[in-house]
Image (cartoon, rainbow, N blue to C red; front, top):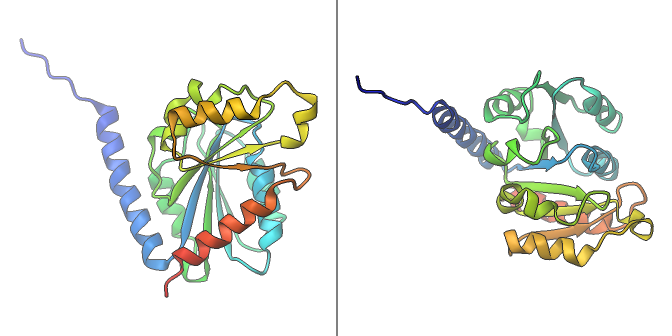
Length: 223
């Protein structure tokens, strides 16, 4: 008897891509940039977002969607820095956000009153690499407390990301972390990766991050 194998994952990803295209279309029509922040747990992306919301309060209208396996702790933290609704997606065990969840979240966002959308993905450098959320770009955040070889251990994430933030540079005097080696590993995987070197805790390097976001908002805005 013949056997037919159905690739369920392939079908699910294809449906996700259809929904991601809808997300991208809605954002493009509204002239809104959207960034998908991805990292390992503890790399500092929530603190990076806290500082960003604080910096642009009253200047740039930012909407935030956060994803976590359990709890809405990150959303609660971020809500202290914005008057806007921060949407928490609790995945209940799933290791990534998907386009359906983002599309649902957009239903609660007035894009006419929005300049920028941040999607804080589940802390994981494997699963989120395969899921398009309709974002303008993925931004991978890793830190000096992780190994320099993170980019070659998780190459797909660094390959699909357009930007990288090396965070916690304030700790470099206390660590055996080689920045040049980390960048070289990342460029082996993705020669076009654009880097930011930051400490969200002390503010080191954050001005370059802020200028980058301002430029992206201006470029996305309708004329």
